[in-house]
Image (cartoon, rainbow over all chains, first blue to last red; front, side, top):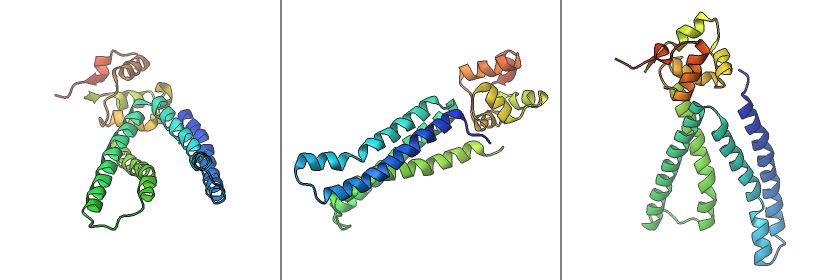
Length: 136
Length: 64
């Protein structure tokens, strides 16, 4: 089936932004090895965040412009993913606090929040789409 | 809510994709409406009624 215009636009916006992220993450990591100064390191470290802001913009635009059921599926998936992610990190925090698990570097935990949220969003969305697809 | 969307669509010989294109929604949305998995919003229900040139209440009826 042909892809709808709104989703074609999303891919046109998503892939260049992700490509920019990949390029900037490598550039940033490599540059940081030789860079001194808090301000300079802050700017270079946050460079890869710029294309991620464009990814989020693309997601917001597709959510707003797609049809009502597609929007409902996305919003349900985001709500469930947010709840599951929050629940998971909260449980993990309790286990770390009780010293049941070895404490990782704080940066390692913080860096994984967004990818885990997006991953849970993807999985949840597949499940909800499947629900609406049954009985075709 | 029950509806006659599938019946009306097949009478006109349209596929779900054809109807989706006319309503500016996805084929998946048309399917979900036809199977009763999803009740359309009031604006979309009116759009469907206009497309089939029928009153909205003759297409959508509350479940008994």
